[in-house]
Amino acid sequence: MKLTKEQIEFIDDYLIKNKVKYWDVRMELLDHISNEVEALMKVGSSFTNAMQAVHVKFGNDLTIKRLNKENTGWDTFPSLYADSSGYKEFIEEKRQGLTKGFGKLQRKALRLFFTNAKSLILYACVLIVFLYTKEFFTVKTMHKTLLLLLMVMALTPCLVSLFNLKNTFKSLTINTALLSSISGVSFVNGLLLAPKILLEEGEQLSPIYMFIVLALLFPFFYISIQLFVKQLKKYKSIYKRLV
Image 1 (tube, rainbow, N blue to C red):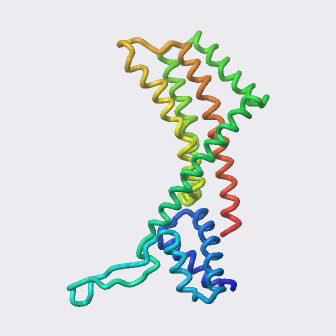
Image 2: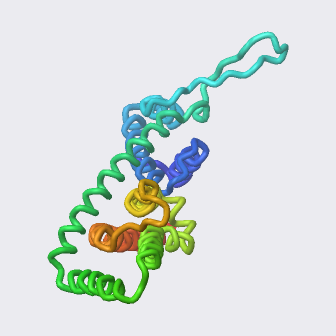
Image 3: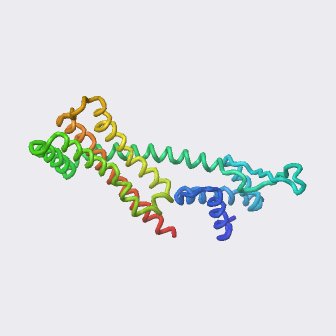
C-alpha cells in the first residue's frame, strides 16, 4: 500500500519536530520509515499504529506524561513527539561513520597527491620558495609567515563554509566534512606553537624544523581543502534537486 503525499509530508514534519535537523539524514530516515510504514499497512495496520510501531523500533519512547486537571497526579498517553533519543543515537552513529569515511578519503587523496604530477610540482615549488626565502628573512619572520600560511590553509574550509552556511549546517555530511577538514589546526598548534614553550627566551625554532613541518602539513591541508569543496559541491547539487 503506497503512502499518500500528505502522509509522506506528515513523516517529514514528524522528523523535523523530533529534531532531525539535517536534511540528508532526514531524507534517509524518510525513505526508511516510509518503507516500514507501508509494509505494516499492507498487513492491516493503520497509518497511526504503523508510525507508532516504527517510532518505538528506532528506540524512541512513545509515552508522554502530563499533570492531570486536579494537579494531583500524572496522566500518560502515547505521543510521537514524546522522545527522540533513538534518532539522536542514529545521527551520532551516522556522524561517526561519516568521520571514518572522510578519513579514508583523506588517506586516499594523500596517496594520489604524491602520484599526481601537478600536485608534486606545486609541492616542490612551495618547498623551494621556503628554502630560497630563508636567505632573506630572519628566523622569527619565517616562523610567523609559516604559522600564518598553515593556519590560513587549515581554516580555509571554514572560510568557504561562511559563504555556504545553509548547506554546511543543514547537512550532516558537510558538517562532518568541515570538522574533519579543520582538524589540522591542532597540528599547527602542536608543531609550531607548543615547542616554543620549551625554548629559552629569544630562542627560535630552527629553519630545518620549520621546513619539515611545512613538508608534512602542506599536503594534508591541500587535499583537505579540495575534498571539502568537492563534498560541498556534491551535496549542494543533490539538495537543489530535492527542493
